[in-house]
Length: 246
Image (cartoon, rainbow, N blue to C red):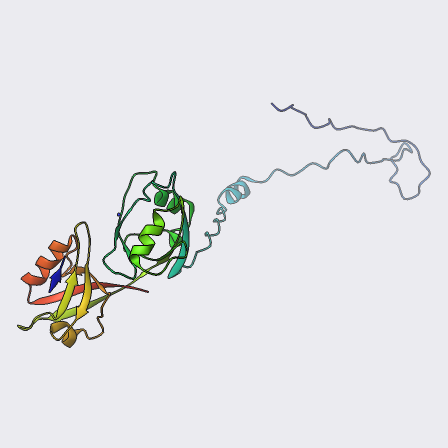
């Protein structure tokens, strides 16, 4: 059964040469004329100019590489707060509300200024909201997809819990059998929601597929629900990509 988002140039002090004065110190070096030579502490000893090979070697020393930025481990579940300009403003996504338990993000709308785009630009890649994610709570509401949808519309601050999808694949050979699936889909969607699994090709070849899983691709084909349904009907063997909430 098939059911139908300028500094001062301060030069260094010139070297000061101080004429030595006679002193009575047996330890001081004495010139032939009886004068003791004192070193002016302001006069630095001459530095030997490095040779050309030494200069070249110094220039060829590798510049230490900057340490890599710390990696942010990607969580399977995380929270995000979205700020809307007004209560009526759109967040910048298209949601599939066919599953009564969760909201499925089937598309992100690229405007450059949406609350989701603003949020994504402010966090690490591992914490960005993506197409194919599931929304499992909105401002503490977890009762149903319908209630979560209503909660989004009631405030300009939306705190959502995101669950990354578990993605897996199965190969199904029809062998003349029916699929044994109840599928549900709607206009603007990008997947087929499995609403029920009965006796048929799926229960035989992929017994772990269950109600609530979504079909994302068929033999490498993605797109609208109609495209996916057509691909299922046209092929006797199916390589199907699935999505499941974590």
